[in-house]
Length: 296
Image (tube, rainbow, N blue to C red; front, side, top):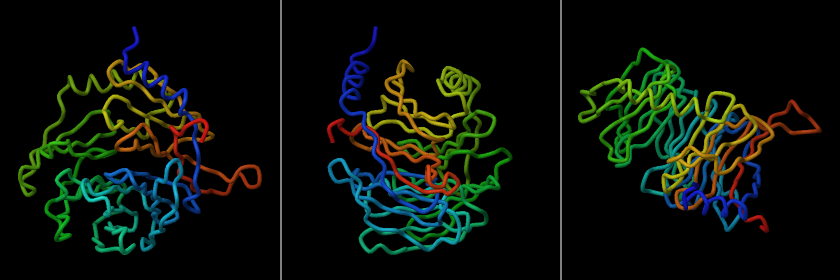
């Protein structure tokens, strides 16, 4: 029997399943992320820029474009508690911290490799950035200096802290989760997740409705929904507890990135956009919103 939550969200999406797209970049969008207060969404693109939108009712209004990187902005994230700061990771071997109040870059930190993933610790004190050579660098968010660096012997796909800020997770190319316990940045404790954790992870993956390996995923603000996407032309929204499909968002192309709003069932996402019937080879970059009222 379907849970009460499942029934409530089914009913909600029946009335709020409209998607709308907003021009953001001149090339494909690699990353989207919401500020902690949910007022803004930022996007990073192959066109070497970041864009920031303000959410106004059921629309995204472009606020500013952020230039400075000399290569693709592969991933970005916001400060966990300050809704005015976000950080970008680029293939130009730098990360940049931006302040939306001044629209300026307040810090540029040089790194050793081409950066592809980034996350900000829940306490706001540390920024972790990973590069194509599977090196993760931990940077002090105040001094902008490196606190620690770890070279891994496996492919690092994604990185994230837990909410308690006492464990750091890495997913690898073999389907397992590796855990660092950064009690002291200079003495990182490294352990591989147990077989039971890996088994659980793989079991979930195999029961997934995607035909291609999941490329991006995001948990909803209440932790009860999981949006996942890949090269399939849809986004799967599942109830976490049961794995049942709550909804399916149809897309015209593969999806690069998904991000739930921090307070409501509103999903930002970006796909491998093309210009369409006029020039199917020319890339464009839009940010899309799903979960808008059908009558909006």
